Image (cartoon, rainbow, N blue to C red; front, top):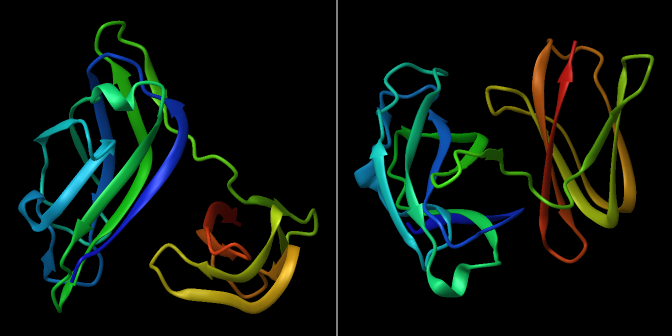
Length: 195
C-alpha cells in the first residue's frame, strides 16, 4: 500500500501549460496498472493541475506504451524544478515499469525538452569491456545493478566510497540500470549498455 516516489529534475517550470509524457510497461504478469490504479501521478508538481489524456494500458510484457497529458503549474511552482511523482497500492500478481525519456513541451512555444535528473551517477565502461566504473560526487553506501528484466546482477553493501566497479563478464548484451543509495540516504540511478 502507498508505494511511490518523487524524482526531481533540473528543468525549471515556467508560467505556461505543458504537454508531458513518459513510458510505462509490464513484465511477467497477467495484471498491470491502468491510470485509475494510481492515487497520484504527475510530471510537474503535486500542486499543479495534471490531466492525463493519452493512457493506453500495457497489454504485452516488455512492450512500452507512451502516456501523455497536460500539466499547468500552480503559482508556487513557477521557477521550481519539474518532478515525476506517483503513489499507488500494488496488489499481488501485478507488475509495472516506468521509464523515460520524460518529455515536456511548452504549448505556447512548441519547444520540447527531455527532463534530465541532476547529479546522477557517472557510469564509465572500461575499454576492456569487462568492467563498469560507477562514480558520484558523494560517497555511496550501497549499490545494485539490474538487467532489462529487473533481475539483480550485481550488488555491494557498505561501499563507503564515491567509486565502485562491477564486472560484466558472463552478462548478456543488455541495458543495465545501476541504483546507488548515497551516504546521506538519497538515491541515484544511471544506465549503461553492456555489449
